[in-house]
Length: 128
Image 1 (cartoon, rainbow, N blue to C red):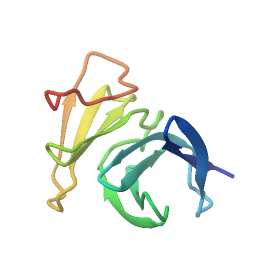
Image 2 (cartoon, helix red, strand yellow; image 1 turned 90 degrees about the horizontal axis):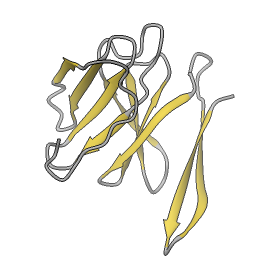
Image 3 (tube, one colour; image 1 turned 45 degrees about the vertical axis):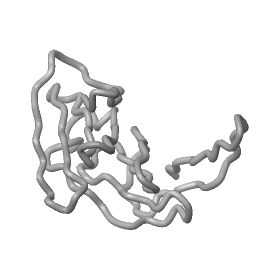
Image 4 (cartoon, rainbow, N blue to C red; image 1 turned 120 degrees about the vertical axis):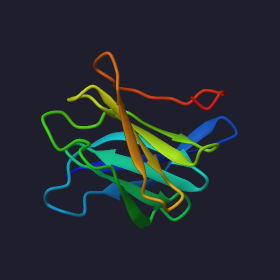
């Protein structure tokens, strides 16, 4: 059984607030998690679907599809959200790419190649 633990941090102390269990037989282990604007985004191994959960209730709201991500040998290993551009960035370790998916409803997805082995991702103050 696969699951994702969500912690709530209040005044420098963390507590377990929710556990997201696998809901399907073919659901893989969680490889990356990020949050933005009251939503928690979860990506699983061998999946091109990012699960979008409400951060308060921990209920699944929808999926964001990133075509080609995670469907081959090694799944996605990095996920970052950008509030400025309202998008997600996901790393593709198999093909050395970074994918960008819009969260505004446009369903636009872009990708670009990187030197090799992208894993963890973050967004800096310049929104890059």
